Image (cartoon, rainbow, N blue to C red):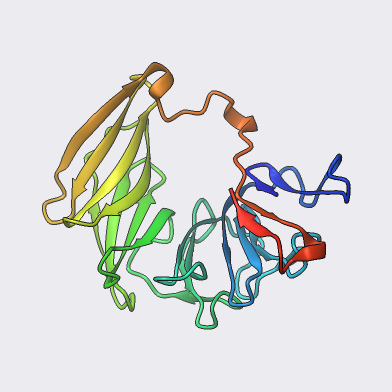
Length: 239
């Protein structure tokens, strides 16, 4: 099982679990390569396993010093195509031309001092959208054609002390859905961002128990991927 605290594997009887990665390594996301092997974006580079999670190895082209915070799959598949880093010495976007096996850095007009939080293909699959944050806490939305030949960016009018996550693109209009957590106010919002005008519309305000913040805090054990190494062909599923 892949959790926000690491990877654990159970014994044959299912009564005991053992950790397969250092406890101080944070897992941001999971995807797969073209062999069907799970790959992880972590605070110490990218890792892949070919035996159902018993052993993990560094993915080629991604240094283990990088904090790999964001990814997007190749459209119509569950195979990673683009990944990006955040809170690293130098941030960038990386592309795989062999369906997740090896990676190479792309040139970008974004400053390497900004952290990539999210990437997605817009619903037309003709554009890549990026959500970024600079060292001063300012958020930006970047738009690029699918070949990533160039980027344009716009600063979002979000006050300091906020944390934003990009949820999805809206299929019927040129807009994004953003989740905004406001530390000081105690009220979170669900926001629609118009990509033509960069205007934001609050769709819903959340307070109290309905807020985005998880009550279990740093010990959140959100399950991501589960597999059984002895029966890889029969059991492999995500929760």
